[in-house]
Image (cartoon, rainbow, N blue to C red; front, side, top):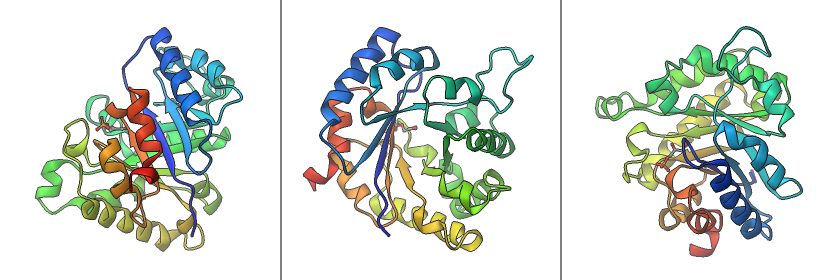
Length: 253
Ligand code: 13P
């Protein structure tokens, strides 16, 4: 099953509008000749509009880091999927471990958000991953299975087909401790097997990104694994050269 690799930069809480525009311009120019890898960037909310304009007509897609499931109303501080559609956003990250850890994101809220994203014709990047304590207690697979089951409640095959999954072991995020290619592939294969049980005809089409300290020098090893279909990149997505090095991972193999 040929799945187009998908590399998305998650800029987290970094960069002003001007800094975001500089980075978006550099990425847009450098990845222009690349056709065999899909690329997206997820700037802070306040830079989405400007970055979206800058990326118009380019091959780089616009992604948001979060959303709210109601379209409008008395929800102070929230940003709805409807507003993201307005800005030309294509992908929305949901269930990132930083939102689960620090902002009370639950599997149920992840599911509400993913459903709203799909209802509006956008694509969720749904993150799952175990903590270090869970890994050490031998609970990795149970944790991932639970996150998938609850996060994907009510999904039809068509909905799953529009969804990207991201496996981000919490202990590997921002720590420089990358999962070994075997550790990552083992979980990715498990995720696909879980999907296959519920959506046998769709599971092989779904892209599963790896996230957690992906750098230009480890991207090739990770992305050449059979069930790793791309990367969700934090720190290394903030410098265009590093990000490009990951997007061009095939050249460093
Ligand atoms: P780092 O690449 O900085 O470890 O972050 C990974 C991540 O959380 C991407 O969403």
